[in-house]
Length: 159
Length: 429
Image 1 (spheres, one colour):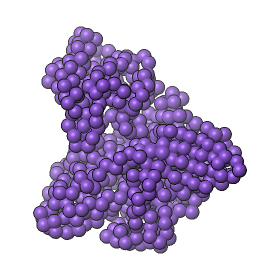
Image 2: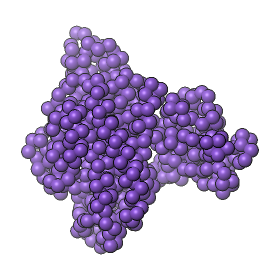
Image 3: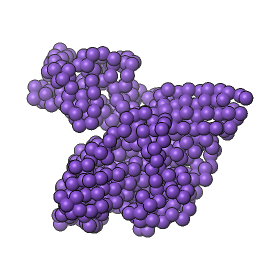
Image 4: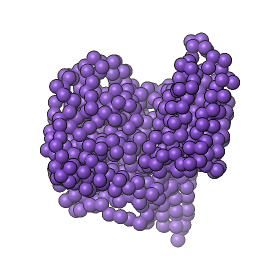
């Protein structure tokens, strides 16, 4: 498959019913409206095998997730995971046994990691069941959405 | 007095987090305790005041790995309360959905979480570098399970198509057909998985378990049946609370389950396999035999092979259901609310999952009780460690700690479901 025919994929990771964990899916919602159809925008739970599958075959992936990094809630960090693993962030991306870092490294080990892999991690305040976004994340949502769009446009002429 | 301490602060590759303390004194294990410190999720309280129809969707959110199990036990309890029988194609579709979850959950545990223990890797990523094709087979098998969940559940995680009485929408025969092709390949992958797990270096361990599982005379029990044990227990699901008791222990935010007369017991693949071997499909029985498994299994480490046999069965059973499927006249049996109490028990991938609800005249939930398999197995995990660790004391400290972790992972513990998180501390005194 030629490089241009492989999709550019944005993956909003999280659970809409767990407080700030909804950030990834909400950014995905906002991006669907604003990005051309050539960019594939999906929501995902963060489950490892499914993530590896979504990364496989893409020419570029942009992953958006709420994280615990020891920063102020709402702070955005962008990591380039194309060549090196995500740094140890002093916390876990996910409360489950395998998280985003493992999914990226598993894809790398299986030679399935796209040449471009950018992670947009936003410091979360709360993962409470049934809660909406916390105010700092509500505030930062448009900024994160714009940052993902800018990065995709900068790196892909056809997006 | 000899005293030694091994401490692990975080137990990886289990669903959720928590801690284990093992104390060894003069070559004997004096204590093995699971400490659980994730705050309880209060799902039981959260359900009170909700309508009966909401229970499947609310409880599905307890766990991202086994949402179908929660839905199946919830609808089963509600149907018991409201006096509905779900039979024929609707019952078969539920069984098909459950097959999807077993395939998905077991494939994840076998390949990503448990196999690295047997091959000496820290995790699936390291293992994938040396065994990429094996890990890809695991991912592909898991994907087949996901495909069933997506088609029948409406989406991959937290399915939304299940309702009390049946489904919101039942698939057509044509819609199910593509699944059959996927599942034929998955069944081959599952058979290869049995052969592969049978060849893994298996620690020697024989435990005298009190095995508890659902039993159905005509099928490998998933969605219903009586609760049986290898020591003579044979009860209706409605009588669960007469025989099983939950108690609070200070070290855990999860309740521990015990049988009133027999103390700790084991639920999950080993129990199902040992009590229901005769109900497996011929292909699954044959695969088990070729793998050197007997008709019962008491070595907890062999659970990886038993799970693989269950994946063969789930693929086989899913194919049978798809082949025999006739579209139902309506996607669900209607339910009228009434003041009532209902009990439901199904076999989650990790074992027996019991639900009980009490409803008022409007069908609103007055009381909910959910007993997940990991809570039931918690005393058994402690008993395994207490009995087995003594035989491993000549292992180097790191190897001993890893063996303890492996012993816990034998259970595929879903600490999230059991309302907790886990850490490991092995102390030699």
